Length: 532
Image (cartoon, rainbow, N blue to C red; front, side, top):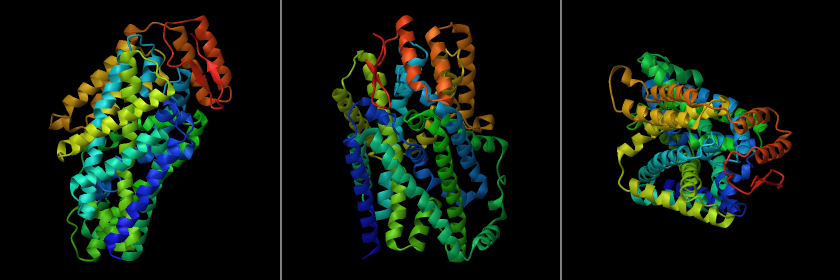
C-alpha cells in the first residue's frame, strides 16, 4: 500500500474511535448538569489529561517545535511559564473551585459561580461574563477549524474547505451528542496520542542521528546560541514569555475540569498526572526541534517550513502507519481544543445568557436539547468565519488567551480567596482588564512590547480590590459559604452534612437569591431539597 493509503487508514481509525466515545457518552447524559459538567464525576486521570489536551492544541506539536527549531532554547520560556502556571492552577485553584462551585448554588459554569458567589441580584456580572466567553470562543473555535482545514490541505492535498468540514463534522458530532463526557474522554485519547508522539519522535530521532551527544554537538555546530536560554532576548521578552502562565487562572475551558472532579481531594493526584503529562509533552517538543536540526544538518537538507518539523520527522523515521498516527496526533490536538471550547460556549449561551435573560427553569430534556442546538449554532457560526482563511482569526488565539486571563484570572482568584470581593468590584475589574488588553495589544514599541496579559491582569486586580473595598458590606450567607468552601477544599468527608447545614441556614436566613434548581443531587445519587 502507498504511504497515503496507510495514513488514511490511520485517520479513519482515529475518527471511528472519537465517534464511538461520543455514542458511549450519549447514553450517560440525561440532564444539563451531565451535558455541561459530566455530573461532577471525572476521575483525576480524565480531568488531568482533558485539561492538558484542551489547553495545548496544535501549538504543542507545530508552533512550539517550530519556534525552538528556529530560535533555540530562548523560546522555551513560554513552556516554562505555562508549566508553572498550570501547576499553580491545579495546586491552589482546583480544590477550592471544586468545593466552592458546589457549595454556592451547585454552579456548573464560571459565570454562574461568580453570580452566586457574589449574590449579584442584577445578574449583570453573569451575563457579561457569559457574553465574553461566547465572543472569544466563537473566534477560538473558528481558528481551530482553520487549522484543521489547513492540516488536511497540507497533509493530504484535500481542498481546505473540505478538510475544515471533515474536522468540524467529526468534532461537532461527538460534542453535540455526548456533551462534556464525550469531550473529556476523547481528550484522554487525544492527550495520550500527543504525549506518545512527542516521546517517540525525539527518541527514535536520536538513534537515527547517533545519540544524545551527537544531537547536542550538531546543534552547537549549527549555532551555539540555540543552546542558550537568554541569547537574543530582552527583559521585556522574557517577562512576556513567562507571563503566559498567568492566563491559566482565567481560561474557562481549563478550569471547568476542576469543577467536574468527583471531589476536591482528587485535585492532588490530578495535578501530578497533569503536570507529568505536560513536562513530557513540552520536553518532547524541545527534543523534536533539536533532533530536527540534527537530522537536517546530518542529511545536508533544508526544512522549508520549521513548524512542520514534527510532521517531516514522523514521515522520515517511521513506517507509514506510525507516521499516520503522528498526523492523527496533530489533528487530535486541534480537535480536543475545539470540542472543549464548543461545550463551554454552549454552557455560556444557555446557562448564563438565555436562562438569565428569559428567567426560565429548564427541565432535563429541554435543557440538553437547547444545549445541543447551541453547540451546533456556534459551530456553524465559527465555520462561517473560517470558510475563508484569515490570519487575523489565527492571530486572535494569543490575544484571546490574554483576554481571558486578564478578564477572569484575577476575578476567579479573588472570588476563591478574598472574602470582601463584591459584584460591582468584579464587574469593574473584569471590564477594565479586557479593555487594557484590547488597547495595549494594539500599540507597539517600548514597554508596549510587553505581552498585554501582564498590564491587563494587574489593572483588573487593582481595580477590583479598590472598588470592592469601597462597596463591600457583610453578607452572612456569603461568609458562611466562603468558610464552608475553604473547609471542604481540605476535608471533603463531611460535605453531605455541610450541604444540609447550608440549606437549613439559607432557609432561616433568606437573602432573596433564587437557587438554580429545586434539588441538589449528591455524588451518591441522593436528592436534597433546596430552599423555596
